[in-house]
Amino acid sequence: MKGYLIILFFITGTANASEAISNKYTIDSDNQLILSNGNIKAVGHVHAVSGDMTIDAEEAIYHRENPNDTYITATGNPIKYNGITEDGKPFSGNSKKLKYTPETGEVILTDEAFVQQNGNTLSAEVITYNTITKKMIASAAPGKRVRSVIYPDKVSQTKK
Image 1 (cartoon, rainbow, N blue to C red):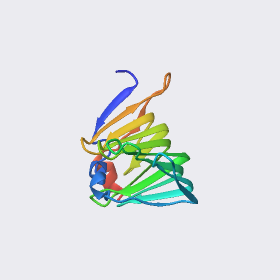
Image 2 (image 1 turned 135 degrees about the vertical axis):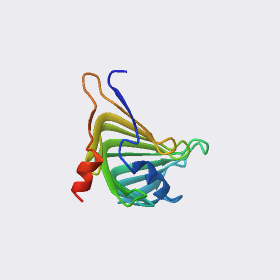
Image 3 (image 1 turned 90 degrees about the horizontal axis):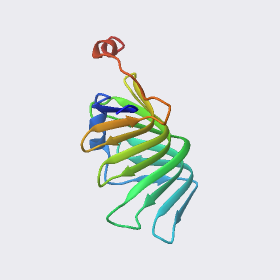
Image 4 (image 1 turned 120 degrees about the horizontal axis):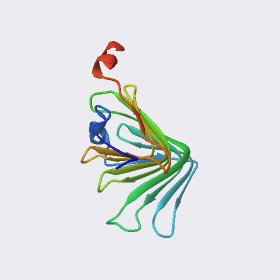
């Protein structure tokens, strides 16, 4: 289990962020293409919004060639994402790659993945978060480690 850190409810309130995500996506970019397989590709200054969640990336693809297995991928240097949890607290993060599968609720952040909320941070090569089960798994690259910095509630409350 070395190199893996399983965190349940790592960042307070982030678990409820999925409830703020709507059933529609608004994507603005420099260019958008509908590919021959039906996928939609957005390129250049991609800004995607779903509910209170925003993602800024260099490129994003909505994969819909298989209606039973749709997902969204994004790449950037880095991709930046921000949102508001149900209790009104902001969270943010970044990575170089992202894959989101709405059907399973799985969000996979890869390549220098980082998440932050209320001063608590998690960084790893891969961070997988399931918006349905509320489980987060962080794994390190070979020879590297996962790092989390967690502040007790008392510390967070004194900064308010």
